[in-house]
Amino acid sequence: MKRLILTAMLCVAASYGFAQTTTTTTTTIVDSTKTGTDTTIVTKKHIKVKLGLGHDAPYVSPYSNDSTKVQRTKAPGFSFGITFSRIDLGFATLLDHGSFTLSPNNQFLSYRQAKTANFGFDVVQFGYRFNSAFKIYVSGGFDWTNIRLRQDITIQRNAPVLTYLPDSIHFSKNRFSSSYLRIPLSFYYRSHEDSRGNYFRLVVGPEVGILLNGRVKQISEERGKQKFDDDYHFAKLRKGAFIRMGYGIMGIYAKYYFNDMFENSPAQEGLRNFSFGLTLGF
Image 1 (cartoon, rainbow, N blue to C red):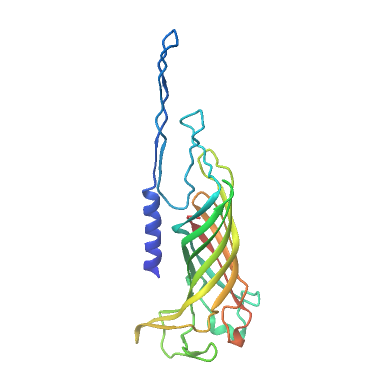
Image 2 (cartoon, rainbow, N blue to C red; image 1 turned 45 degrees about the vertical axis):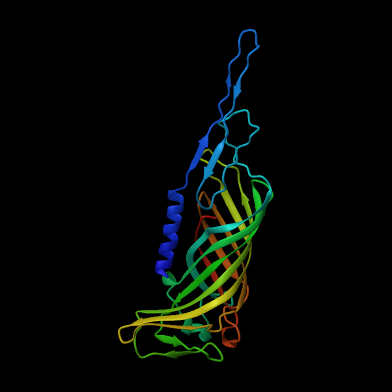
């Protein structure tokens, strides 16, 4: 997971590091004699090259009288493409019937908040832009929730309900995680640019997640590093909503899922997931 986060951040840094805009301005030369019988007009074409992540490329109006003026507007229309954006890195929190305190049935899931993380990003998107300020798009990506358990227990695979067994050894790391394919529908709004070319952004919408895998990862002196994969009764389909807001390339996000984290496990009914943190490239 650490290598994955590091790779993502390096990709973002590289994308912004090599972002550039090259402009060839329009020059008009008028050579006219006093009699006005010889007039020559030479116009150079505008060339715009935009590389980067998470920004709307500026649009230069061909009808502008000022050849050096850049209008950051976008024409309405559909778009589709591969992306690496909406990179979320934050904390995951368990809510037990709306409370941050776990009920006795869920005490075995007691976790270390500072090491319980949510990480995700989008890799493809399809949308429609109405104008420079508003667009709507559906995207697809991946989302991980990693719960760092406090107790020395092992969540059991292939159990009829979510089941654990206590261990006699101490785990330096006992992580209980899930990975989902995430499919958010985003309603995007941005304000007018300020003098520095930045603007406020607000993105809200529903999100659907399809379970890819569940995993228990443990590290101890006695057993070394161990990984166990199973669905662990994580919800096969999770439904929630999200909000992202920020200024420039950075922002904050929050996500809440309306259905329970686990299914076919009555003791965990009412246990849900809430995540919040920083988002980049949205």
